[in-house]
Length: 165
Image (cartoon, rainbow, N blue to C red):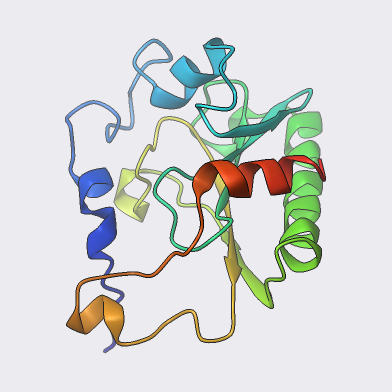
């Protein structure tokens, strides 16, 4: 069996006893706190839409890793309105298109982990991942040197992506 080893995400993966819980309230939610602030650039919020928000992942698996989140503090797709779910999927489509055309990704991984047991880092606030993939973006560095090369600046990547939403 092969294992995905991502040591650069260790500070994110540590359970702080708050955001990792399925029952984290809106008041405690890191995403909801960022949404209430109006500092979109520092919070890596690319754009706000009617029902959802697109933001860069602060702890990316790869360059241009986007999150699409409902504005509402929900933990399951069934808690979203049909309009919000539809908008989310349209934003996934747009995000994938931007990844391919603007930041030259050759592919993408798209998905969500629903619930703590499924691996959700912040299970109380549903979110969809769009992870751009590049030829040769995996190599020995993560295993041997405990290093993942992500050669981009989050702020520069955000400005590049933001212009296309």
